[in-house]
Image (cartoon, rainbow, N blue to C red; front, top):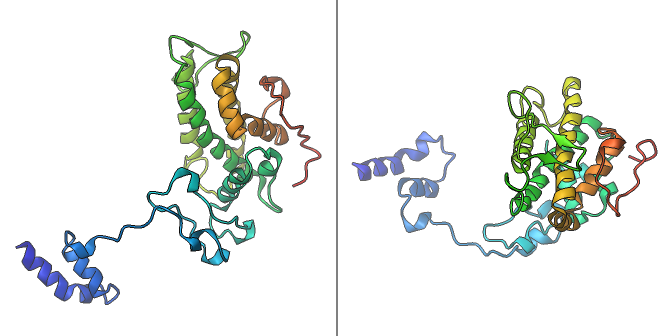
Length: 272
């Protein structure tokens, strides 16, 4: 019976687990529905030792129930102290959280950072944030209002997600582009590591950037109010434009979104 098995497990579990698991834990495993197995409810607010004090003691985790305005409220960490293969992503997101409007600081790599990995991680971050713009556009961008993916009247884009590139409603083009970029950037064939990037894979980053930029251009020329709301909060298009200029991933004549606050980036004269 179940109880007989549980009794046997309680008596023999420690021996089976080579003495690593404590008896109290085994008791919880044997009777998962007992009151002792229920973890104490934690406060939704971030505790003091998670927000202040020595960086070595800080728990960089949002507890369940944390309010959005209280999320990620821990001290910044120096890049050299980030002990993770995801340290580049962590640094980029830390800089964005600190000041999303400081685009030059966000796109400037730390000393001795591999440039290809730096570009790759930024493009991953752009894809993540562009999903927010895609959601915002859905309120008014649909196959009826925008049957083609257009920017100005001179620019009509074909969707490469199909077997043969063809015209797509703008909102579908946006979804297909973000999905395709996510598949490519997470491909073990082309990007099997977050630490090094193969030379053959680096060339694909420019193609991803060109397609992502079309989402900005469509929103700017056809859904300006939504674009302005999103850009005022995130500065994403400004950052993307500065990024592709600095690393020469797009040509100047392709950058058709005119931003009053755009920073001047000279790829030859920007310090690393």
